[in-house]
Image (tube, rainbow, N blue to C red; front, side, top):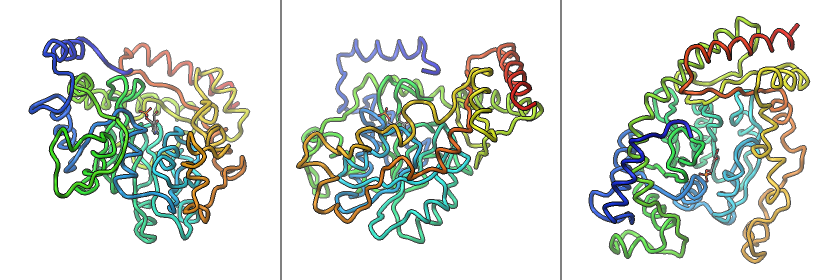
Amino acid sequence: MLEVGQKEIDAVAKVIRSGQMFRYHAGGQCERFEQRYAEMLGVRHVCMTSSGTTALTAAMVGLEIGPGDEVIVPSHTYMATAVAVLAAGAIPVLCDIDESITLDPAALAKAIGPRTRAVVPVHMWGVGCDMRAIRRVAKKHNLLIVEDACQAVGGDYRGKPLGTLGDAGAFSFNYFKNMTCGEGGAVATNSKAVMNRVRTMIDCCNAYWTGRKADVQPFVSNGSRASEIEGALLNVQLDRIGGLVSRLRKQKQRIAAASVKAGLTLTPVHNPEGECATQISYLFETPAQADRFAELAGGTVTGKTGRHTYTEWDAILARRGSHHPALDPFRLPANQKCRMEYGRDVCKASLDILARTVMIGLNPRAKAADVTAKIRRIAGAAQAVLR
Ligand SMILES: Cc1ncc(COP(=O)(O)O)c(C=O)c1O
Protein backbone atom coordinates (compact mmCIF):
# COMPACT_ATOMS: atom_id res chain seq x y z
CA MET A 1 0.00 0.00 0.00
CA LEU A 2 1.64 3.22 -1.10
CA GLU A 3 -0.88 5.93 -0.29
CA VAL A 4 -4.37 5.47 1.13
CA GLY A 5 -6.04 7.98 3.43
CA GLN A 6 -9.15 9.77 4.62
CA LYS A 7 -10.49 10.36 1.12
CA GLU A 8 -10.64 6.62 0.50
CA ILE A 9 -12.30 6.05 3.89
CA ASP A 10 -14.94 8.68 3.06
CA ALA A 11 -15.56 7.27 -0.40
CA VAL A 12 -16.05 3.73 0.92
CA ALA A 13 -18.30 4.95 3.75
CA LYS A 14 -20.45 6.76 1.19
CA VAL A 15 -20.92 3.57 -0.83
CA ILE A 16 -21.81 1.55 2.25
CA ARG A 17 -24.30 4.18 3.41
CA SER A 18 -25.89 4.26 -0.04
CA GLY A 19 -26.65 0.55 0.24
CA GLN A 20 -25.49 0.06 -3.35
CA MET A 21 -22.40 -2.09 -3.20
CA PHE A 22 -23.26 -4.09 -6.31
CA ARG A 23 -21.87 -2.60 -9.48
CA TYR A 24 -24.45 -2.58 -12.23
CA HIS A 25 -26.34 0.66 -11.78
CA ALA A 26 -26.17 3.87 -13.77
CA GLY A 27 -23.55 6.33 -12.57
CA GLY A 28 -21.99 3.74 -10.26
CA GLN A 29 -18.41 3.86 -9.01
CA CYS A 30 -17.11 0.96 -11.14
CA GLU A 31 -18.64 2.41 -14.28
CA ARG A 32 -17.14 5.81 -13.45
CA PHE A 33 -13.70 4.35 -12.81
CA GLU A 34 -13.76 2.35 -16.04
CA GLN A 35 -14.61 5.47 -18.02
CA ARG A 36 -12.02 7.64 -16.29
CA TYR A 37 -9.25 5.03 -16.50
CA ALA A 38 -10.01 4.42 -20.18
CA GLU A 39 -9.71 8.15 -20.76
CA MET A 40 -6.42 8.34 -18.85
CA LEU A 41 -5.02 5.38 -20.79
CA GLY A 42 -6.39 6.61 -24.10
CA VAL A 43 -8.19 3.32 -24.88
CA ARG A 44 -11.78 2.60 -25.85
CA HIS A 45 -12.61 -0.01 -23.20
CA VAL A 46 -11.67 -0.84 -19.63
CA CYS A 47 -13.26 -3.55 -17.49
CA MET A 48 -12.63 -3.91 -13.77
CA THR A 49 -11.98 -7.40 -12.44
CA SER A 50 -11.36 -9.01 -9.06
CA SER A 51 -7.55 -9.20 -9.50
CA GLY A 52 -4.63 -8.90 -11.88
CA THR A 53 -4.72 -12.68 -12.34
CA THR A 54 -8.35 -12.67 -13.45
CA ALA A 55 -7.63 -9.63 -15.64
CA LEU A 56 -4.79 -11.47 -17.41
CA THR A 57 -6.93 -14.60 -17.82
CA ALA A 58 -9.83 -12.58 -19.20
CA ALA A 59 -7.46 -10.81 -21.61
CA MET A 60 -6.23 -14.19 -22.91
CA VAL A 61 -9.79 -15.43 -23.30
CA GLY A 62 -10.82 -12.11 -24.82
CA LEU A 63 -8.22 -12.64 -27.54
CA GLU A 64 -9.39 -16.23 -28.09
CA ILE A 65 -6.11 -17.73 -26.93
CA GLY A 66 -6.68 -21.34 -25.91
CA PRO A 67 -5.73 -25.00 -26.34
CA GLY A 68 -3.18 -25.60 -29.09
CA ASP A 69 -1.53 -22.21 -28.49
CA GLU A 70 1.81 -21.44 -26.93
CA VAL A 71 2.23 -18.10 -25.18
CA ILE A 72 5.69 -16.73 -24.44
CA VAL A 73 6.18 -15.40 -20.91
CA PRO A 74 9.30 -14.04 -19.21
CA SER A 75 11.31 -16.17 -16.80
CA HIS A 76 10.92 -13.56 -14.09
CA THR A 77 7.41 -12.36 -13.24
CA TYR A 78 4.75 -13.19 -10.68
CA MET A 79 3.58 -16.74 -11.46
CA ALA A 80 0.10 -15.39 -12.31
CA THR A 81 1.38 -14.39 -15.76
CA ALA A 82 1.99 -18.04 -16.67
CA VAL A 83 -1.04 -19.23 -14.69
CA ALA A 84 -3.32 -17.01 -16.78
CA VAL A 85 -2.06 -18.70 -19.95
CA LEU A 86 -2.93 -22.11 -18.48
CA ALA A 87 -6.27 -20.83 -17.20
CA ALA A 88 -7.14 -20.07 -20.82
CA GLY A 89 -6.12 -23.63 -21.79
CA ALA A 90 -2.87 -22.66 -23.54
CA ILE A 91 0.75 -23.48 -22.68
CA PRO A 92 3.30 -20.98 -21.33
CA VAL A 93 6.77 -21.03 -22.90
CA LEU A 94 9.55 -19.47 -20.83
CA CYS A 95 11.81 -16.81 -22.30
CA ASP A 96 14.90 -15.06 -20.94
CA ILE A 97 14.91 -11.53 -19.59
CA ASP A 98 17.74 -9.07 -20.19
CA GLU A 99 19.55 -6.83 -17.70
CA SER A 100 16.52 -4.53 -17.52
CA ILE A 101 14.75 -7.52 -15.85
CA THR A 102 12.16 -7.46 -18.62
CA LEU A 103 11.65 -9.74 -21.63
CA ASP A 104 14.71 -9.86 -23.88
CA PRO A 105 13.52 -9.14 -27.46
CA ALA A 106 16.40 -11.18 -28.95
CA ALA A 107 15.49 -14.16 -26.76
CA LEU A 108 11.85 -13.67 -27.72
CA ALA A 109 12.70 -13.93 -31.42
CA LYS A 110 14.55 -17.19 -30.74
CA ALA A 111 11.79 -18.62 -28.54
CA ILE A 112 9.09 -18.44 -31.22
CA GLY A 113 7.89 -21.80 -32.53
CA PRO A 114 5.20 -22.95 -34.96
CA ARG A 115 2.52 -22.90 -32.22
CA THR A 116 3.39 -19.53 -30.70
CA ARG A 117 0.29 -17.39 -30.72
CA ALA A 118 1.07 -14.59 -28.29
CA VAL A 119 3.67 -12.95 -26.09
CA VAL A 120 3.25 -11.38 -22.66
CA PRO A 121 5.69 -8.52 -22.07
CA VAL A 122 5.66 -7.93 -18.31
CA HIS A 123 6.59 -4.41 -17.24
CA MET A 124 8.32 -5.82 -14.23
CA TRP A 125 9.05 -3.75 -11.15
CA GLY A 126 7.44 -0.71 -12.79
CA VAL A 127 9.89 -0.60 -15.67
CA GLY A 128 8.61 -0.73 -19.24
CA CYS A 129 9.81 -3.48 -21.58
CA ASP A 130 11.61 -2.67 -24.80
CA MET A 131 8.24 -2.41 -26.53
CA ARG A 132 9.59 -1.08 -29.81
CA ALA A 133 11.71 -4.20 -30.32
CA ILE A 134 9.06 -6.55 -28.93
CA ARG A 135 6.38 -5.11 -31.19
CA ARG A 136 8.69 -5.49 -34.19
CA VAL A 137 9.23 -9.21 -33.40
CA ALA A 138 5.52 -9.74 -32.69
CA LYS A 139 4.52 -8.10 -35.97
CA LYS A 140 7.00 -10.16 -37.98
CA HIS A 141 5.67 -13.41 -36.51
CA ASN A 142 2.03 -12.37 -36.31
CA LEU A 143 1.86 -12.70 -32.53
CA LEU A 144 -0.74 -11.16 -30.27
CA ILE A 145 0.59 -8.97 -27.45
CA VAL A 146 -0.99 -9.22 -24.01
CA GLU A 147 0.77 -6.71 -21.78
CA ASP A 148 1.11 -7.60 -18.13
CA ALA A 149 1.05 -4.10 -16.66
CA CYS A 150 0.13 -5.37 -13.20
CA GLN A 151 3.23 -3.74 -11.73
CA ALA A 152 3.16 -0.74 -14.02
CA VAL A 153 0.09 1.35 -13.20
CA GLY A 154 0.99 4.97 -13.95
CA GLY A 155 3.97 4.22 -16.19
CA ASP A 156 4.41 4.86 -19.89
CA TYR A 157 6.59 3.93 -22.84
CA ARG A 158 7.60 6.84 -25.03
CA GLY A 159 4.53 8.74 -23.88
CA LYS A 160 2.01 5.92 -24.32
CA PRO A 161 0.65 4.38 -21.10
CA LEU A 162 1.98 0.92 -20.28
CA GLY A 163 -0.80 -1.59 -20.84
CA THR A 164 -1.98 0.10 -24.05
CA LEU A 165 0.79 -0.93 -26.45
CA GLY A 166 -0.54 -4.37 -27.34
CA ASP A 167 -3.83 -6.06 -28.17
CA ALA A 168 -4.90 -6.04 -24.53
CA GLY A 169 -3.35 -4.97 -21.24
CA ALA A 170 -3.93 -6.23 -17.70
CA PHE A 171 -3.48 -4.31 -14.45
CA SER A 172 -3.46 -5.29 -10.79
CA PHE A 173 -4.74 -3.12 -7.96
CA ASN A 174 -3.75 -5.43 -5.15
CA TYR A 175 -2.43 -4.15 -1.85
CA PHE A 176 1.17 -3.75 -3.08
CA LYS A 177 0.47 -1.84 -6.28
CA ASN A 178 0.82 1.85 -7.16
CA MET A 179 -2.95 2.16 -7.27
CA THR A 180 -4.80 -0.14 -4.88
CA CYS A 181 -8.27 -1.17 -3.74
CA GLY A 182 -7.01 -4.05 -1.61
CA GLU A 183 -7.59 -6.63 -4.34
CA GLY A 184 -8.60 -5.79 -7.89
CA GLY A 185 -7.60 -5.56 -11.51
CA ALA A 186 -8.59 -4.31 -14.93
CA VAL A 187 -8.34 -5.13 -18.63
CA ALA A 188 -7.81 -2.43 -21.26
CA THR A 189 -8.32 -2.88 -24.99
CA ASN A 190 -9.45 -0.98 -28.05
CA SER A 191 -11.42 -3.92 -29.41
CA LYS A 192 -15.13 -4.15 -28.66
CA ALA A 193 -15.19 -7.86 -29.53
CA VAL A 194 -12.34 -8.54 -27.10
CA MET A 195 -14.06 -6.49 -24.40
CA ASN A 196 -17.33 -8.37 -24.90
CA ARG A 197 -15.52 -11.63 -24.23
CA VAL A 198 -13.65 -10.12 -21.28
CA ARG A 199 -16.90 -8.99 -19.67
CA THR A 200 -18.40 -12.44 -20.20
CA MET A 201 -15.28 -14.10 -18.77
CA ILE A 202 -15.32 -12.14 -15.54
CA ASP A 203 -19.06 -12.42 -14.96
CA CYS A 204 -20.94 -15.47 -16.22
CA CYS A 205 -24.20 -13.61 -15.73
CA ASN A 206 -23.10 -10.36 -17.31
CA ALA A 207 -25.77 -10.68 -19.98
CA TYR A 208 -28.52 -10.88 -17.36
CA TRP A 209 -27.37 -7.77 -15.56
CA THR A 210 -26.56 -5.59 -18.55
CA GLY A 211 -28.94 -7.07 -21.10
CA ARG A 212 -28.54 -9.75 -23.76
CA LYS A 213 -26.85 -8.38 -26.89
CA ALA A 214 -26.75 -9.77 -30.40
CA ASP A 215 -22.99 -9.33 -30.69
CA VAL A 216 -22.17 -11.12 -27.40
CA GLN A 217 -22.00 -14.89 -27.46
CA PRO A 218 -22.33 -16.21 -23.92
CA PHE A 219 -20.03 -18.94 -22.61
CA VAL A 220 -19.59 -20.50 -19.21
CA SER A 221 -17.12 -18.61 -17.06
CA ASN A 222 -16.55 -17.73 -13.43
CA GLY A 223 -17.24 -14.76 -11.18
CA SER A 224 -14.49 -12.15 -10.95
CA ARG A 225 -16.59 -9.02 -10.80
CA ALA A 226 -15.53 -5.90 -8.92
CA SER A 227 -17.73 -4.23 -6.32
CA GLU A 228 -18.67 -0.60 -5.82
CA ILE A 229 -16.33 -0.47 -2.82
CA GLU A 230 -13.38 -1.21 -5.09
CA GLY A 231 -14.71 1.24 -7.65
CA ALA A 232 -14.96 3.99 -5.01
CA LEU A 233 -11.43 3.33 -3.76
CA LEU A 234 -10.02 3.40 -7.26
CA ASN A 235 -11.74 6.64 -8.15
CA VAL A 236 -9.84 8.29 -5.30
CA GLN A 237 -6.63 6.44 -6.12
CA LEU A 238 -6.84 7.61 -9.71
CA ASP A 239 -6.61 11.20 -8.46
CA ARG A 240 -3.44 10.32 -6.56
CA ILE A 241 -1.51 8.29 -9.15
CA GLY A 242 0.02 11.16 -11.16
CA GLY A 243 1.50 12.89 -8.11
CA LEU A 244 2.64 9.63 -6.58
CA VAL A 245 4.53 8.48 -9.67
CA SER A 246 6.12 11.86 -10.16
CA ARG A 247 7.39 11.87 -6.54
CA LEU A 248 8.75 8.34 -6.97
CA ARG A 249 10.57 9.35 -10.15
CA LYS A 250 12.14 12.41 -8.51
CA GLN A 251 13.26 10.42 -5.51
CA LYS A 252 14.73 7.75 -7.75
CA GLN A 253 16.57 10.34 -9.84
CA ARG A 254 18.18 11.79 -6.72
CA ILE A 255 19.28 8.39 -5.41
CA ALA A 256 20.41 7.32 -8.90
CA ALA A 257 22.67 10.36 -9.35
CA ALA A 258 24.31 9.77 -5.95
CA SER A 259 24.64 6.03 -6.66
CA VAL A 260 26.47 6.61 -9.93
CA LYS A 261 28.84 8.98 -8.10
CA ALA A 262 29.46 6.18 -5.59
CA GLY A 263 30.58 3.95 -8.47
CA LEU A 264 27.47 1.76 -8.68
CA THR A 265 26.00 0.48 -11.95
CA LEU A 266 22.29 1.04 -12.32
CA THR A 267 20.09 -1.57 -13.96
CA PRO A 268 19.44 -0.40 -17.55
CA VAL A 269 15.95 1.01 -18.14
CA HIS A 270 14.45 1.20 -21.65
CA ASN A 271 12.41 4.34 -21.06
CA PRO A 272 13.49 6.05 -17.82
CA GLU A 273 11.10 9.00 -18.27
CA GLY A 274 8.13 6.62 -18.21
CA GLU A 275 8.95 4.31 -15.36
CA CYS A 276 6.80 4.04 -12.26
CA ALA A 277 9.12 1.89 -10.19
CA THR A 278 8.88 1.67 -6.45
CA GLN A 279 12.51 0.66 -6.19
CA ILE A 280 15.94 1.42 -7.60
CA SER A 281 18.02 -1.46 -8.98
CA TYR A 282 21.73 -2.12 -9.34
CA LEU A 283 23.70 -4.62 -11.38
CA PHE A 284 26.89 -6.20 -10.02
CA GLU A 285 29.62 -8.28 -11.62
CA THR A 286 29.24 -11.21 -9.25
CA PRO A 287 26.45 -12.73 -7.12
CA ALA A 288 28.70 -12.43 -4.07
CA GLN A 289 28.90 -8.65 -4.54
CA ALA A 290 25.12 -8.47 -4.96
CA ASP A 291 24.52 -10.49 -1.78
CA ARG A 292 26.87 -8.32 0.25
CA PHE A 293 25.49 -5.06 -1.13
CA ALA A 294 21.91 -6.15 -0.43
CA GLU A 295 22.84 -6.95 3.15
CA LEU A 296 24.67 -3.69 3.78
CA ALA A 297 22.36 -1.35 1.86
CA GLY A 298 19.08 -2.92 3.02
CA GLY A 299 18.00 -4.31 -0.34
CA THR A 300 16.85 -7.56 -1.93
CA VAL A 301 18.62 -9.63 -4.55
CA THR A 302 16.06 -9.69 -7.37
CA GLY A 303 16.49 -13.44 -7.89
CA LYS A 304 15.76 -14.06 -4.22
CA THR A 305 12.27 -12.62 -3.74
CA GLY A 306 11.07 -16.20 -3.27
CA ARG A 307 8.29 -16.11 -5.85
CA HIS A 308 9.05 -14.17 -9.00
CA THR A 309 11.43 -16.51 -10.83
CA TYR A 310 10.30 -19.54 -12.84
CA THR A 311 12.36 -21.88 -10.66
CA GLU A 312 9.85 -21.16 -7.87
CA TRP A 313 6.64 -21.75 -9.80
CA ASP A 314 5.93 -25.10 -8.13
CA ALA A 315 2.59 -25.96 -9.79
CA ILE A 316 3.98 -25.27 -13.25
CA LEU A 317 7.26 -27.09 -12.67
CA ALA A 318 5.16 -30.09 -11.55
CA ARG A 319 2.96 -29.59 -14.64
CA ARG A 320 -0.22 -29.50 -12.63
CA GLY A 321 -2.16 -27.11 -14.82
CA SER A 322 -5.56 -27.58 -13.23
CA HIS A 323 -7.34 -28.93 -10.16
CA HIS A 324 -8.51 -31.92 -12.26
CA PRO A 325 -6.35 -33.97 -14.63
CA ALA A 326 -9.05 -34.05 -17.32
CA LEU A 327 -9.06 -30.26 -17.44
CA ASP A 328 -5.28 -29.91 -17.27
CA PRO A 329 -3.92 -28.02 -20.31
CA PHE A 330 -0.67 -29.98 -19.97
CA ARG A 331 -2.67 -33.17 -20.72
CA LEU A 332 -5.12 -31.89 -23.31
CA PRO A 333 -4.69 -33.64 -26.70
CA ALA A 334 -4.77 -30.23 -28.42
CA ASN A 335 -1.64 -29.20 -26.54
CA GLN A 336 0.52 -32.25 -27.06
CA LYS A 337 2.56 -30.58 -29.80
CA CYS A 338 3.27 -27.56 -27.58
CA ARG A 339 6.61 -27.22 -25.81
CA MET A 340 6.46 -27.84 -22.05
CA GLU A 341 10.02 -27.33 -20.86
CA TYR A 342 10.36 -26.04 -17.33
CA GLY A 343 13.67 -27.46 -16.14
CA ARG A 344 15.87 -25.34 -13.89
CA ASP A 345 18.27 -24.60 -16.73
CA VAL A 346 15.86 -23.42 -19.44
CA CYS A 347 16.57 -19.74 -18.69
CA LYS A 348 20.08 -19.88 -17.26
CA ALA A 349 21.00 -16.43 -18.56
CA SER A 350 18.11 -14.95 -16.55
CA LEU A 351 19.23 -16.70 -13.37
CA ASP A 352 22.70 -15.23 -13.80
CA ILE A 353 21.35 -11.67 -14.19
CA LEU A 354 18.87 -12.06 -11.34
CA ALA A 355 21.59 -13.27 -8.97
CA ARG A 356 23.60 -10.10 -9.73
CA THR A 357 20.79 -7.55 -9.42
CA VAL A 358 19.77 -5.81 -6.20
CA MET A 359 16.64 -3.72 -5.58
CA ILE A 360 16.19 -1.10 -2.89
CA GLY A 361 12.69 0.13 -2.15
CA LEU A 362 11.57 3.75 -2.53
CA ASN A 363 9.03 5.44 -0.30
CA PRO A 364 6.84 8.16 -1.82
CA ARG A 365 6.25 9.62 1.66
CA ALA A 366 9.95 9.82 2.55
CA LYS A 367 11.23 13.23 3.67
CA ALA A 368 14.37 14.73 2.08
CA ALA A 369 16.36 13.77 5.21
CA ASP A 370 15.21 10.13 4.93
CA VAL A 371 16.40 10.04 1.34
CA THR A 372 19.74 11.55 2.37
CA ALA A 373 20.14 8.81 4.99
CA LYS A 374 19.29 6.15 2.40
CA ILE A 375 21.86 7.60 0.00
CA ARG A 376 24.53 7.51 2.74
CA ARG A 377 23.78 3.87 3.46
CA ILE A 378 23.90 2.98 -0.26
CA ALA A 379 27.19 4.86 -0.74
CA GLY A 380 28.69 3.15 2.32
CA ALA A 381 27.64 -0.27 1.03
CA ALA A 382 29.06 0.55 -2.40
CA GLN A 383 32.38 1.47 -0.85
CA ALA A 384 32.56 -1.80 1.05
CA VAL A 385 31.58 -3.95 -1.92
CA LEU A 386 33.40 -2.27 -4.80
CA ARG A 387 36.76 -1.55 -3.24
C1 LIG B 1 3.60 -9.01 -12.83
C2 LIG B 1 2.34 -9.47 -12.15
N1 LIG B 1 1.41 -10.11 -12.87
C3 LIG B 1 0.25 -10.50 -12.32
C4 LIG B 1 -0.03 -10.28 -10.99
C5 LIG B 1 -1.30 -10.78 -10.42
O1 LIG B 1 -2.05 -9.77 -9.81
P1 LIG B 1 -3.04 -10.10 -8.59
O2 LIG B 1 -2.21 -10.38 -7.38
O3 LIG B 1 -3.84 -8.86 -8.45
O4 LIG B 1 -3.85 -11.26 -9.01
C6 LIG B 1 0.90 -9.62 -10.20
C7 LIG B 1 0.64 -9.38 -8.77
O5 LIG B 1 1.49 -9.23 -7.94
C8 LIG B 1 2.12 -9.20 -10.79
O6 LIG B 1 3.05 -8.56 -10.09
